[in-house]
Length: 276
Image (cartoon, rainbow, N blue to C red):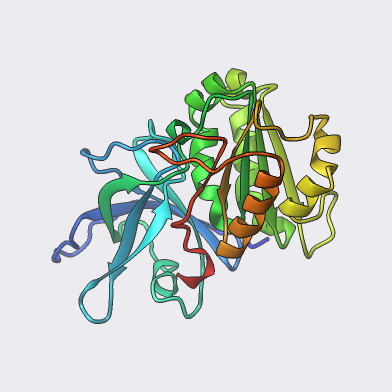
């Protein structure tokens, strides 16, 4: 894993024109050569439900805003906003965004939307958060929201990456949650973390779809197989991942819901994946 917590004191900067909808970067952490997270100031007017996304970005070479959808990784009570991103060398946005530093400005359009919200699911006993790569971001928000533990008896976070170091952001987040003075008691006994790798050999391996269809995750966590009476699910990953997981969930009898029609599972269709 590439160590590199890059956080410096805010320093006075020369006067310059502000970006439209500008927010200030307050911290940056590079987790691997391909993954980083950062925090920015929160607009006073911004109200959002944990799990939603906003449009963020920078000015493009043509002088116009270059924006992409980013899930907010921080919970709705946080005074700042956190984001978790992949680095794409030739990506129009992340090729530039990965170089941001404390004190820099980004564009943030304060109009949150999204389907990975509690309101889009019917009440249930368990909720499954299913993510690959930076698709973990909306669940980083939901796992830190007390409402999640008020609504469900069990919260299962399945996260799959290629290598172990790519899981580190989520691993540290879950560890901090269990030790958190405010939410730790709510998390204890409810949050189950199930990280797996697909390329590097680790203690737990396999794709989310395979671990669900084979029943391995149910055996490992001593849980019953998914059923529409008790289980709810949220999905965030690449388009191919979403399609595959939807087929698995529907095989268990779960139906896809939406804000306008809550059912047993929801999928975040705005996740950009590796093309940013």
